[in-house]
Length: 114
Image 1 (cartoon, rainbow, N blue to C red):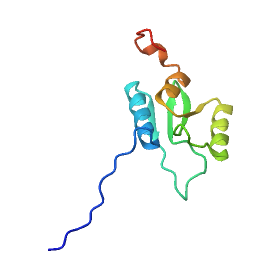
Image 2: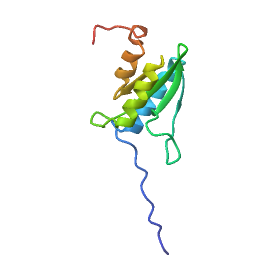
Image 3: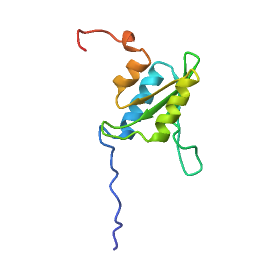
Image 4: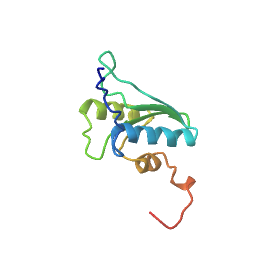
């Protein structure tokens, strides 16, 4: 009898870009902020942020990076273009970056922390 060599399912590390993206999208959903994940590819436009959406009537672009992830020039240019045209565009390396950039901190209970 022959056994199949199956690859073990690997879960992303707690600080992987995929994990950060999921956490951000969960947070946005919790606050009912319309958003979607942009899946780039060879036919896509370079620099488009990972998460797109609309917040308080403004276009929203969030480029997700790990703590050490490098923002490419095309990505920074796209975010700048969003901001230049009245939208909200930023790099998020954590949930705190999203909370701060969208001004959501006052929606959380304050237990004397940060």
